[in-house]
Image (cartoon, rainbow, N blue to C red; front, side):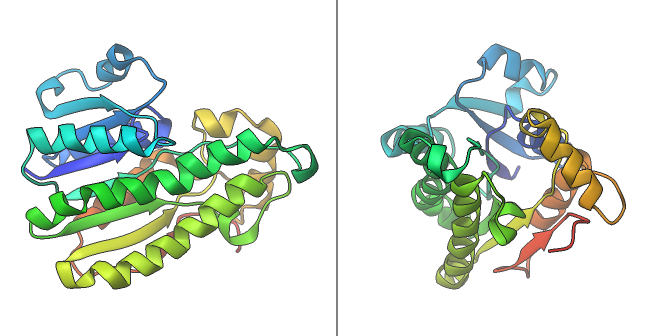
Length: 237
C-alpha cells in the first residue's frame, strides 16, 4: 500500500484529503497539532488500522524531527507528502505583533521546509514520490491585512519551484496547489473575506473542499508532473 503524510489532517481540507486517499488504498500518517486525537480519529472510523495520527508543532523543527523519526520507525519509506497545514493571523502591518508573523511563517513556510527535508530519505527509499504544497492566491496577489500569510504562501511557491529542480533526479515530484477560498474552519472564521471571495469569483461561488482534495489525490497519482502551480479558483489572478 502507498503511504502518505498529510499535515494539518484535522483541518477541513487536510481531513478531506485523508478520507479520499483512504479510498485509493493509501495508508495515512495524519499530522495534527492542537486538535484532540480521539476526535480526529473518529472521522476515520473503520480505517483506524490504516491511519497513524501523530502530533507535532510545525513551528518547532525538533518536533518535526521527532515526528518523522516515529514515521521512520513504522515505515521503511513513504510515497507522498501533502503540506496542507496552514494558519493566518490577519491584521494590518502596523498592528501585526511580531509573534503573529513568527507563527504564520513558522507553520506555513518553515514547517513545510523542515517536513520535506526530514522526509526526503523516506521518499527516496520508496523510489521517489510526490510532494504537494498547499499555497494560496494570497501568495500571488497579496491581500491587505495578510502580510504574514501572503508572504508565507508566496515563499512556498518559490520553495516548490526550487525543490522541483533539485529533486527531479531522485524522482521526487514537487508541485503546489492553490485551492481557492473554501468553507473550512479557517475560511468561515472571516465572513467578510468569504463574501469578497464569492463576489470576485467569475462563477459567483467559493471553491469546493471535495474538489480540491480530489484534484490533490489525482495529482499524487500522476507520474510526469513537477514544478507546477495549479490554481483551483475562479477568481482571476
